[in-house]
Picture 1 (spheres, one colour):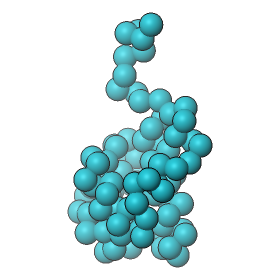
Picture 2 (tube, one colour; picture 1 turned 90 degrees about the vertical axis):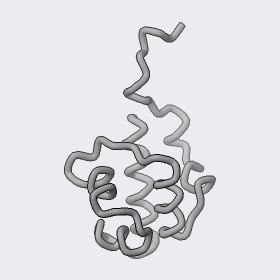
Picture 3 (spheres, helix red, strand yellow; picture 1 turned 30 degrees about the horizontal axis):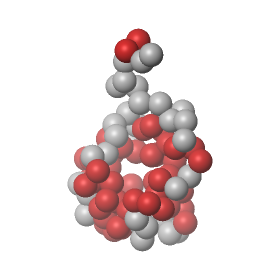
Picture 4 (cartoon, helix red, strand yellow; picture 1 turned 45 degrees about the vertical axis):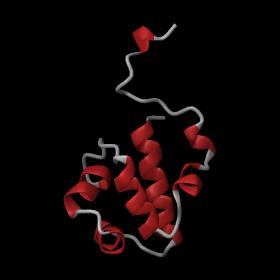
Length: 88
C-alpha cells in the first residue's frame, strides 16, 4: 500500500469516528485550507500532507499523531518517491 493511500484511509477513519463525512467538515474543524484538503482527499488523492498540516488535521479530528499512525497498515507502506533501485 502506498503511504498516501494509508494516510487517506486513516483520515477517512477519523472523520467517520467523529461523525463527519465531507471535506467541508474537515476544513471547518481543522482550519486546513480547502485546496490542501482537496489535494489530499479529493479526486486526485496523490498528495501527502506535510507534518504540520497532518498535525492540524489530527487536532481537528480529536486525535494525535501517535494515535493516527498507530495502525498495522503503516508497517509495510511504500513511499513512491523512493527509488527502489538504490536499495540494497
